[in-house]
Length: 171
Image 1 (cartoon, rainbow, N blue to C red):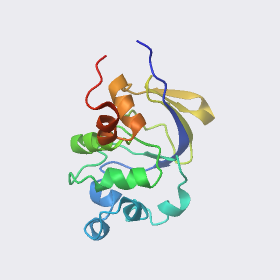
Image 2 (cartoon, rainbow, N blue to C red):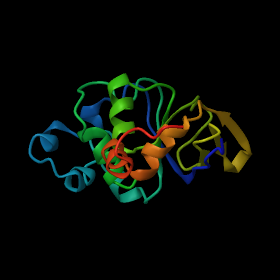
Image 3 (cartoon, rainbow, N blue to C red):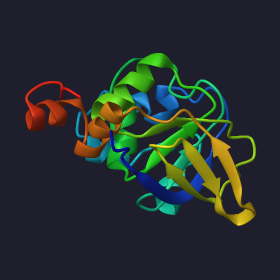
């Protein structure tokens, strides 16, 4: 079976441990609208009020342990996706956040993020599980995504996957 190659490149914006879904998108917004584009304008503003001004399309959120803890609402990963973030890298993810992210096609990478600093340019190969920190030629290992997860991410999420394939593709 041919292995897919899905490579992302962007600049790191680093946050700490236990970034919960209310930090990702504050309740004062997620209870007013379901518009993901509107929510994206307020991404992480309770932790970093200038984040939305600094980030660029394709940039990467890097965090410590337990990213996405808190409520199970999909608004948090949707706000990240619609803000143009290319992927989230963290030491660990809350299980429901992880599943919600994959379901909407947001790449999330579990790896040791200690040696990544804000502003580092990163290249991530989702198929091989390699995360390269460009400035110091450091290669971090992550668990590579299985082919079917890459397919889900590539088409934009689980709903789009089923629209495209009409069910699970048989390998």
